[in-house]
Image (tube, rainbow, N blue to C red; front, side):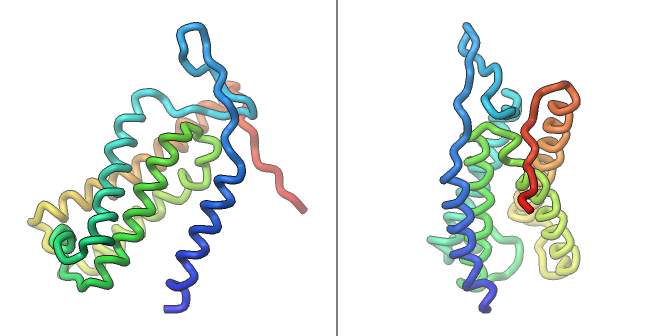
Length: 182
């Protein structure tokens, strides 16, 4: 229980630290399209933005519903949960949704590098938990299919983002690498 109590303030602290260092301004071409940004920023491709919006909205809506109306929204979880469990799952889903939508608004694969590395592991960890608790999950429900689609989307987002960032680096786009402070 003490770890869970520390998780929320730590998350707020990380968000505050992230907001203190805003993204660089975008340079635009004559047609208004983004050319590049100062500091070696790599924007997300245009085709990925609608997909990120759907993924982020799905997590945000599910998370908010589970957090604020757990009695109703717990029916969308493919196993039996009590109020506290539904709200705990809601907080995590809400955090994923906010993170995906924030990355969409920021449009910077470079600043999102830590998230791009971590979200595939989050999806795999959730998959392992689902596999370990497979008997408790109602796999025939729409909620199970939706959860698997959202987890697949998070995994795909992380892997695809890493590939796009790696391609930008190899194509000569100057991506600023974090320098260790020692």
